[in-house]
Length: 384
Image (cartoon, rainbow, N blue to C red):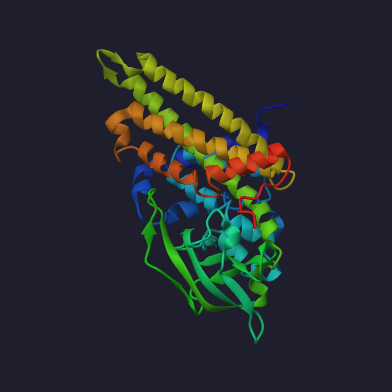
């Protein structure tokens, strides 16, 4: 098995790192502290072909590989962690779901704007009583007498909801899991309103979304009833993007902690000379190398199709755990400096903590892994 990157991947990695160092390094700290969405980064990424990297050309993307997208996130995160979030949004999550399942009409109207960075899409999935058990969602789409559908319900914890122009809304066309699909709703649609922004611990805003009899044309149905399994299969790609950021932020934190340990002196010598610090750095490196191998295996195999559910669950679980542990240890090594907003280590700590919940919690990932080990589906529901 060859673990070496190809010449093309090596050149791509160097190109992305160079772009980030030239344009993103200087404002990295300010960018992480700003409440506003970094439109300048969106423009830079889109202009340099870093949006839709692994989305097929037929859907308006670059037609590259999932591994290319992972490499880009890794390199940008090492220079400007906040900009890696923008890169993730332009390649994974909502934009990937849209590109994967949108019909010709949806693609014609929205794909170019989304992939050029002029527009943003968000996935509206969670509800007040449907989180990990997303199949318990109650937002419903019922047939409209004049054609199309009428959407009613509420969503919460929707990333990018404050500034998104387009929303992929998971909804129920009928009873049971078989009745779940999704529709596309544009900001400003009659009956669609948002609550006041709230903020996650990592500083990202989210808004409650309210759908009061919103008309959805037939051509804006993304996946009809019965599409839930396809949506979840596509969601494995989202987990690769989530894992990539966790790993990359962990690597960023190790790099900063190492530099600090070599420079900071206490008791007459660099703190890197103390075994307690050395072991922390060693454990961080071991964890990161393991996480990267699992992430790259999953991404490379997925280039031959959608990611394997077991592989993506393992990669997400390990990368989420290692990324947060590295951020946590970096804060400890750097002391008050790491705990301060004067560095990006505490920013990475807060971001990595959120990814242990978003995209499937660590507990849900362990459930998926156990299913893979045992070879059969395990229901979490109380037996009826």
